[in-house]
Length: 172
Image 1 (cartoon, rainbow, N blue to C red):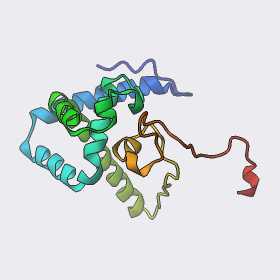
Image 2: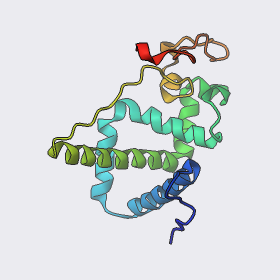
Image 3: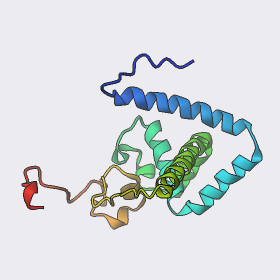
Image 4: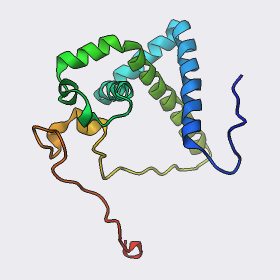
């Protein structure tokens, strides 16, 4: 039984929400691993369809967890620089955790498209946004350092972009 008494009606404590979601997703993943091959095959199909991004993403999350959420620039040099041998070692040692993150993305993907279909069937359009700024501590920068202006020795940013802190939004 999960104790929900610490959750409030009038505000959210996001750390508690995240911890609860992690607990529930962990249980769902354990159940998933013990069950039918059809679901396992669907997960494999999902991986193949999303291969162009999801391998780096799940690996990044797994390494980030292992290093207690430190920025990737503080990881050991071999991981920071995306060296194949170091990444292969993590893939072997943390295979189950990588699979967990793949499972979480698969669950999100399923739920998102069910929600989208539900809304579209009722002639409700969901608007999304496109990020115009990539966070330095992201899988995008870590996996594709050659796309960004980084110091080749330290892998730190050499330039920073973003919105000005004091801006008059009335003119936007």
